[in-house]
Length: 155
Image (cartoon, rainbow, N blue to C red; front, side, top):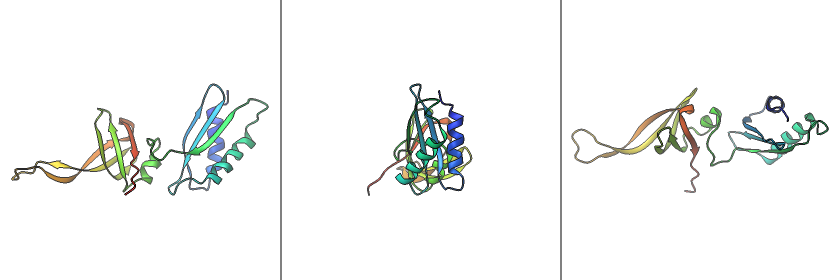
């Protein structure tokens, strides 16, 4: 079976001096290699083709047969790497926390493994009879949420 670290090294070599970043590499026992890349402005098919050819030039099919798929991280799919969080600052996201609570709000900031989502929710304010809608910041750790994903909106 092809070593994931070998594929990662090849992909990292292609990524040098490019604004793309690696999201994920998956290897299946039947020889399928799936490489996901991303970019702040989206991924071009021509770049996926270029990366695919780059990998194929460096992996020998004589040693082991494989199927290669290179593509972008799905737009509505959960984030897998910190760079995806950074790319979506200021955009609406959905977070499912470790307790199963789902919130939707604006991704406000990212700092290392921590991120903040501003959620418009009803809050009881002292001196008011009814709850008032206001933005409330919720802080999370990337490795402590079940998922975070961009909410696609057609407004």
